[in-house]
Length: 69
Image (cartoon, rainbow, N blue to C red; front, side):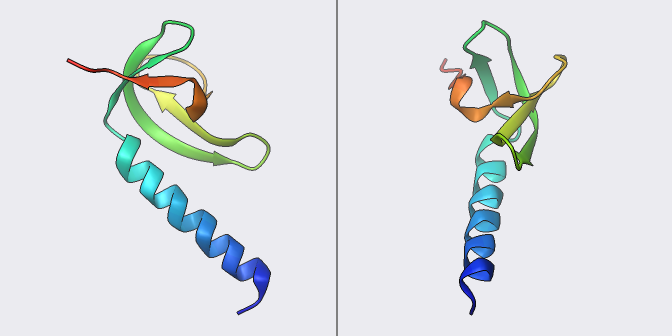
């Protein structure tokens, strides 16, 4: 399998795992916003981003913390 296809398959597999792990989880962003992850997006310029229910915008996954009870 050509190298480019192999890399694409790895990226898509990791994206699927991240989506399964994050979607529906309650998170807190570094700027204090909190909510439930509604969608996980793959942005070619910025990498993995999330949409939080009730808040406008997309945030990098590196800015979240999981809500612990």
